[in-house]
Image (cartoon, rainbow, N blue to C red; front, side, top):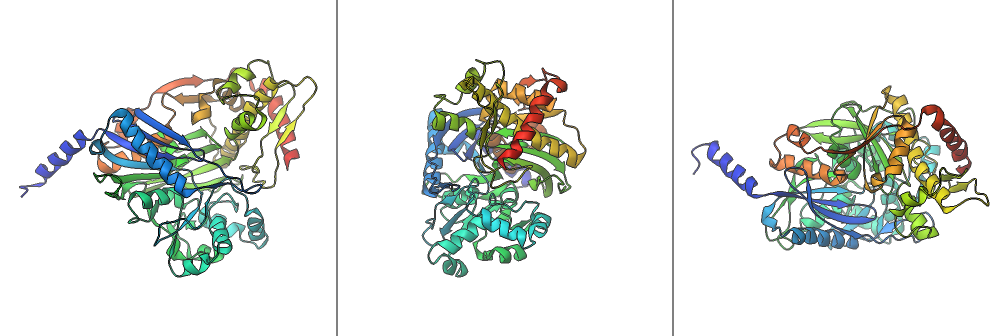
Length: 509
């Protein structure tokens, strides 16, 4: 029997002191990863497995939800074994995930009824065009902050219900559940007890009202999706449930959940209005904190929820570049001009410039600020003198120039001049790419010592929920810079490259 709350508080503090780590699950488009993060915000152990990509038809991209789960559980186990850590030492689990990717499963069996339709998939592009033609663009944008695009989950759910035998009848009977990848992992980790998501992932479905913070009945009706399929929506930093005993003997709270790009924004500690980051992953994702205002773009950017923390909602502007680091993978796997992705920088340095080559990597259309779903990739300006190095240079320029277009749109929408960009993601390790970005943007580019900021953001959300860190001031101590890139060429020198890019990108339409 407790004499007062102080005894209980001491017990909680003692228990947390014994728990030295947050386990972060970072489920991305091309791989499943797990990391152990300590109180200093350091990644102490990491495991990763590539995820099989399926392309059943042109423009279609699918994943196997069972592989997502098995690979994610496997790397979680591996990262603990590498460090010799037991589940008893884990204070909480944080989840960051590829957004918009859609899974529909049977509530009774727990089995998916169709492969996961990935955010890159454009099979419903024509359906989105019909919605625009019918005059629903403004309604959807007003409620969700999103452009009408196959990128988001709503038309993917509708497609599954319409194309899979008996799916719609089962949905109407309440037998099916929808989730983005976070929901699927939470369901599996809790043994089917918890069907939930967070506000950031919900805000990417085209079914969630970002002002009322509820699933929108009118939009559910428009897409013919039953409310019974939808997960409960929670804040980013709270206890969702606990791991099932059949997976982990010691129940661990799942306490932080976020879409990967919002997690990266939080992991970069872009906590003030006007701060922004770019994650150079499969795509490039530029997100700017706009504070408590849901600012609507005049330049085809997305208004989205950055996070909900301490019962307060922070909003953001986002521009998504569909093909970022994935174009380097294409040079490796499609053209075979490099053996490893990291070789592109060395290859690009074998020449002094792009040799007149311009690359528009519109493999799955163009995202912000163009939103051209039917755009196609274009390698322009090839001559007999073109070398592999010129193509490598043009590739890195294309990644930076696509990102530049988004950031200039953000400046126009907010009236805020960008003087500093925080970067992360695998491709941010490429010094030449970061220098291009600083030159094109004419601003400082800050690369942190730990570029695993997606995982770090999810860890921060989880740790705050269980008292692993006391408050945001604790998190500031973890931020260490690796390198700052400043412009090496003037605006006059780089402007011809930018102007030519804008001229040629229109040809891909």
